[in-house]
Amino acid sequence: MRVKTKQEKGFADLEAIVPSSELDVLEEIIDWSLIRAVLQGIRGDYCPVSMYKMLLLQTWHCLSDDCIADALKRDLVFIRFCGFSLDGSKPDGTTLGRFRSRLVKYDLSNQLLQIVNDSLSAEGLKLSNGKYVSSDATLVQSSRRPKKTIETKDNNVDVTYSDDTDATWTAKGNQSVYGYSSSIITDSDGLVESVTTFTASRSEMTRLGEVLEPANIQRGQVLLYDKGTDSAANRELLKQHGIKDGIMRKKPKGQPMTRWNRLRNKLIGKRRFVVERTFGTMKRTYGLHRARYLGLAKTQAEVLMKSMAYNLKRGMNNYLRKQTEVYCA
Image (cartoon, rainbow, N blue to C red):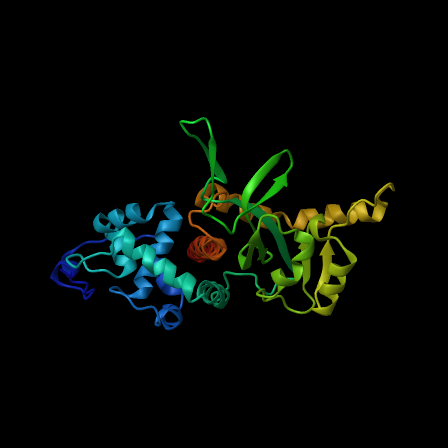
């Protein structure tokens, strides 16, 4: 029997006393009508904006589909933020998973990130027009083991390979990683501008053009990057895009590095720490070190969702800090 999925507020909602929270800030700083317009093509039993907000809550609190569905049934702040009614039905974990799959199918996450960034910029909470932007890549382990070995009764060994067929191997230091590599571009304050995910074996040296494609980098801005992309071809690529070269220089083979390049690398390193800070927070707080889902497309969407959650959290904190400064003044 199909459940009743109406979300209209009832008598219980009018009588309930819901404590205020930082989530209330998002109603002021984000243009939800634009997000509603992007998501209107996704059909389901529940409002797609409510489902999108549910994904944000899941990311902020690092919960599974079933855990966030359970939390939504008992947390009044979550219910109000997502726009559900107290006496109406709430989506379960399976429903949330189907909504996420449709986001991936219709490739809507990039548009959602752009709306989030535009809303933060309109409120003066994002330094999108700063002089510098920074980029770097991080490895994301596959959600599956690369292979498992089973010994049969007749002493033969059967090897079952991972069902995450998009993931590949790469070496990082003394360790080998099976999974993906995500490149992000951040603004001067470390908020994510764009995300591009590749298989782990794809070299940073060969993918700068694809990293720049979705980024909204203005002509004349400086792109700060580490030595992993230092090549004449990449420097020429930046020149063609009208972007100033902020790539750190490699030490020439068999030759000492010039004093100027050592100083240049030091100065770039002092500015591009923001992208390392962003990765650190996303790995420590949102579990970016390991993918939750199978495949390159779903991993890309997952990193984009974590980026939106990160930007919105920073935006909320910046907004509250500005309000405090105004009040104290």
